[in-house]
Image (cartoon, rainbow, N blue to C red; front, side, top):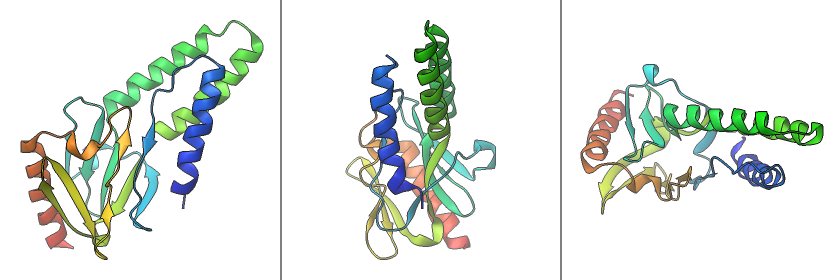
Amino acid sequence: MRPPLALPAVLATSAMLAIVPVRPATAMSVSLGGDHVRWAEHHDLADARFAITTEDGKVTLLITDREVAVQLSDRMVHRVQRKLRNKTEEQDNPVGMAIASAVVGTVREMIDDSFECRLRDLRDVAYEDGRLRFTARNGESVFEDTDLCDSDDVMSRFSERDARAFVREFRKAKAEI
């Protein structure tokens, strides 16, 4: 399971980026809610059953036929990749270029991933007090403290209309499994 390693990798990468003068493009943290949430590949939105994006356009929450996933939006992934490419090209000495290349490779790999939870491991999702709340089958909160790309408490960053539509779609998907 990659999540326990993911956060230390982000922190180590952030420290390395400080050496190379590249501002960390993303910070990711998530409350794992037991063993339900796992680190996975970035989902193609074309394969999603339903997807919503935060009002600032940075994070996407989606449902497939089997999972619910939280990931950087495609727009944000492209923006970060462009910034990383520019920072690598700005390095004017071989050591800086080598460090920047290593860091950029690590960050690129991490931003193109997601946190996901299987639909069957979730009991419900509700929109309460201006935020989405996911509950696992065992009653634990899932995605509770999700912070991605300077968007703290991601689950409160969706419009009410989108969040309520997500709840409806989740319940339809859950009924079909």
